[in-house]
Image (tube, rainbow, N blue to C red; front, side, top):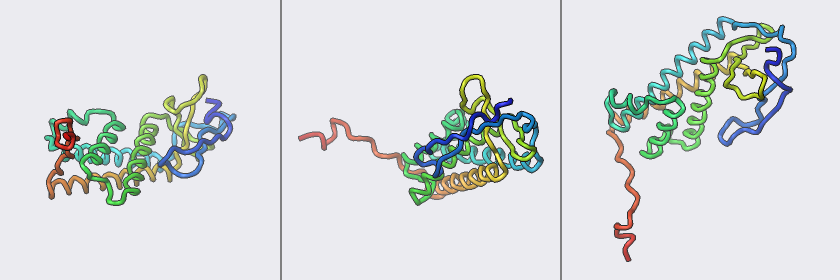
Length: 206
């Protein structure tokens, strides 16, 4: 644990659609005495709120898929019994296929999907990582899931404002999925997209 977080500050360029600006991904901490297990109660409460909000959002995403495809809960569970990351990508593909965007504004929709993906990653680290603090003040999550070179263990800072941001993203995303479910319930399921033309169609005949 003497090397958490490892290495000197190092930055990488963000992926397209991610938050702007370079992100510090690693920073050296040579004094292990600065690290202690456990986090303040306010961090625990915020983490619990974030994980519960995430579960609510995930269930709304499932309901959106079921409603869009006209599936019963029993059949729907067979379709969405997959990893959350894959489930959200499935919801995105169906949203695009049936022309039911998360938001009327295209840019807002793109940012929402990106935020949801980031929330999935954050939630997994919060739920499966080991919580510690630096100098009894800075919460970190230690996890083998965070990439690092052989022989070292990585960690990631999770201050209160970051945890609360995850909660806000999940609450907003749940609202967007719920709005689509209401739209389907009141207006009916949208028709499937037209099939692509085949060589037998008139447009292929001279």
